[in-house]
Image (cartoon, rainbow, N blue to C red):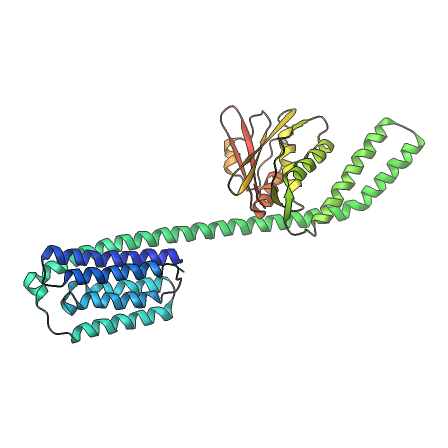
Length: 375
């Protein structure tokens, strides 16, 4: 279905075609009240501007009435430009407004029939009716080119929108499959993990070995992550979160995940972003990927009109160009064989919150840009 601006563009073509007819009247020197016709054409333009926000095809009926008045004052049915009656009907049909198109077609038939009842006019015949037909043919060609161009652009936009919807649906299905497997794994690992923690505690009481303390901390982190997976199974709706709280949360959890990697935070700024239970894990996963490239990670915080831009720089070469082009799909990992689901899930999580994930850089280095939707 045509949008309001597309309908308006096609009506503008019709209005321009009427102007071309008036110009031909002036050039040919036909004996018609040109100034009155120009005033009528201006009234048609005013109506075009007043009805530009209407999404239905009803304004085309008024366009048809004004077009009939223009024809009535410029030769009636002998005017070779009467084929312009067809354009509003085509516009209404393209707008998928079949009922309105019927009324527009009836208005066209009524207008043409009214012109047939007017007295016979010889103005066009004296000046050469065939030259008028020639001009009308050229005008029709121009209108068709403009009309087809607008239609092709509309179809391309619709095709791109459908393709994006299909990709989003596919990603959603993949995420649901991964989420189902994660929930199943969390359920199945809960009991073995509890047994492992109890065993580690008993061994630590019997023999105070430092290695057991490291094992207890590692098992504690595993239990914490399983708890977060369970919480994510029932996600809360997106809510505003301050940038300061987000950065503080990221820093605290990154220190637990990568105690040997330095994380340089940006200067605190006042602002809020859309957040849910998946935002921090998504960014944390990107920080973990960056930690494999160097021992220091630098964060920069920039502002765009609708997003906060968090840049993650690690000083390393970043992803290969062919991987950057496949952003948003399950990517092969540089660290170990696998589908690279971390980057894929981060992309999907950010997109769902109105953000984005971009990879930028040159031959020497690359960095990740995380777009956070402003709240």
